[in-house]
Image 1 (tube, rainbow, N blue to C red):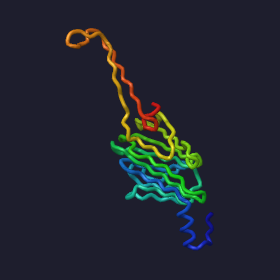
Image 2 (image 1 turned 180 degrees about the vertical axis):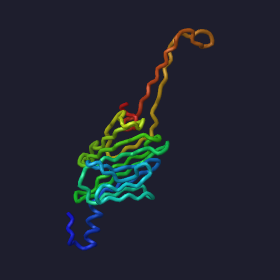
Image 3 (image 1 turned 90 degrees about the vertical axis):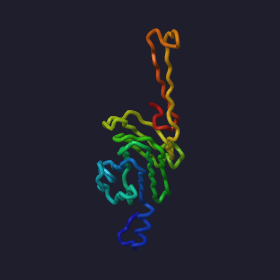
Image 4 (image 1 turned 30 degrees about the vertical axis):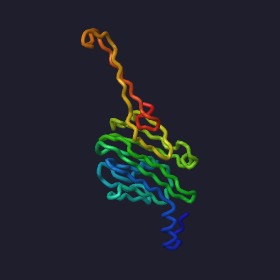
Length: 193
């Protein structure tokens, strides 16, 4: 715990061992949001540092919260099409808990919200709830659980089935029904949709 009479070296050691570090890998903006809706991170290209004892560095796309006393939501907003990464590391007197998301597909305006249950992650459980808003309209389309690593390197599969009566040259001579079936691997961002 923090005591104002501690020496500078001790204060720095305490700060270094009691922090959350949130790093984004573009093309996204990351916002850390506390229960009072204070935000630290980038909001529409502008640096915001409303959470107490927090800072945001735009060059490294990193937010740091010293002496965190709250639970947080980590919001990722797509600023372009591509894939993004997200790293959340929490250091405390109880040790280190980390979460890594890599190669997550994103488009402009899409929103991903991560809620991290550090106790569950520390026990090796799926402690991260991910909500996905594909349209960026504030309505989440689906959610899923993840463990300490979320990686989507496997493209979803789409299968097409066409049915109808075929005639000469394999051309359809009746109404045609086309069915699409999409599947994604467990842990994939489209899983469970």
